[in-house]
Image (tube, rainbow, N blue to C red; front, side):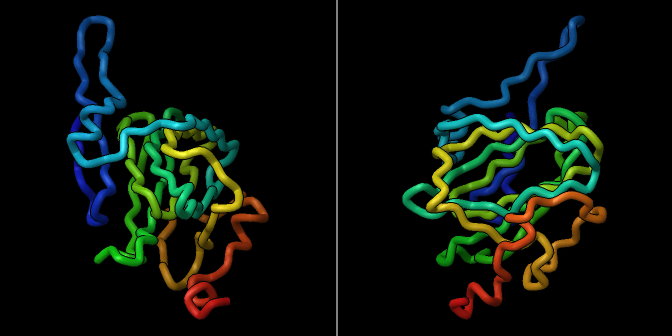
Length: 181
């Protein structure tokens, strides 16, 4: 695997190192030792699959706080998504900064999301399918979220949002969270 750190410390784009032959190719998608060697948390507590009927579907922006903070390894296995993460670590020099990356069935890239990063994505194709390896169990009492369209972050999503859950469309705005609202 090839690990490329994003502008957000600890967040990596991970590319496959394909070993081709006449049948196709073989590639490792996860190795605890390689993750550990890069200072990443190699724990997998859950694996999740998300399927999206329509282009424009929005999921996120979600994260969990301590003691249930979670890492994620996100890969699009069918279609394409635009994946965004926001650094929610107050002590980080990139606190409240975000980065977006296109993950597709063709580029086979994965995004490693550290603890205390909000995460969300938009489906760029009908039938987009996403697999997550998550480093902590889902714990509803520790779940937090941000609005995908919060003007504070000014995230430039590639297309119009056509589908979103009620919960995701009603997370508080960052300005309300920072003022204590």
